[in-house]
Image (cartoon, rainbow, N blue to C red; front, side, top):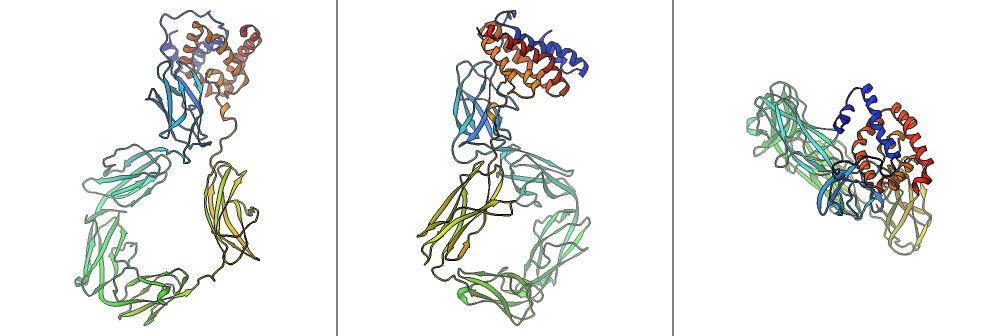
Length: 575
């Protein structure tokens, strides 16, 4: 049966495939029975088989993250690429086949960084090659971005197009509505961050995963803006469209005339404003025409003061200095070092949203008024020690280095240590107290940690009977490398047997591999047969792997007897 016909039979019904499968599986039987020269020679030499690579990919000893690009170059020309899987491997799924010419040098790049290892290209060779790079940071990973739109418009990425992007890349998006339609908003599935999800022209930060971004459109309705009184200022449609789709975010702004202040917004019919008291705000468009009114009033002066002046600043957030009666005014207190905000007072009296909150609001009176921020001196006594928890470095799967800085003040010596725990644990564990006599930094290396686990820690300092603590910080250990990774799929040379046993590390596969290397590859006919086997067996193996019943039948009725026969005659063919 020709190779073309053999391939076609795989796509038939299950019953017919099972019947034809016997012929394909006989290739494996023949592989193990040939001992150097019983196969007929082919008229033509088979085309060169790709050189197949697989293995782990690590950065400074730790697995690189899933999705990292691995590229193969033959004599500096790129020939193939693949990505790293979830446990830091390449060439497993999919198989990494690299075309080339005999004797050429194969080099590898991981996330754009050249790996330490290279190889010499050989036709049909299956080679485990564990790749390593150095540099201290994980190489970047690219993820696919898909764009779509609902009826009524389209979306483009100006000047770029749709490509895989690195996580954190800022992508420019533009939504364009058709006649009679308006833009509503952007959504991302499964997740993503927009500079402004309600703006047709915006940017999107690419997450660390594939994502689909959708522009939503809808039929438009008219928007009318008016002023009360007209002399008080102007109500402005910021985007100047005059009509918007239901659900669209509409931006409006009140511009004041001299001597007037803004009071609030109202609408007919009612809409929900982002902040009805802010001169610039937004609302969600209704599924009908809407009229928006900006209300103005005569402005009165506002004076901001501090007590004491050295304590900090009392800030009129909008910075206008004069407001209409009834206007909502936002104020903020910013304390200087060594001081803390206490409370607000006003003359004449007003009602604050919170008298003790550093940022709050009040309603303007129909007269000028003065608002005062009161501060308190909270400087620590001179000579008191301090401790500051610093960020973690050198984080691996099972270890991390934690840091603190400290001052001893007037207390010599002091003692320092770390409190640590897994984020989900109720209790802390502690490093040993260490004595210090001068200001400085202190570091501990935590070992024996659990991979892919979040930890928290804080620096502690003790002087006399007093213990003070730095802020709590967190870190997450890297993905573990797993166990026996180098053993996984160690032999691609017997696809069907691997599928039958469900693992490439089975002892039986080693027997078949030895027979291939010692007997078949030592003769011309045997090498040609191996090349043919590599060409035909992968789809057969895939077919077997999908069915537990087929795997059992192939293993018990075909592969096990072959392995027994090859093993029983090992003394003969090895010699």
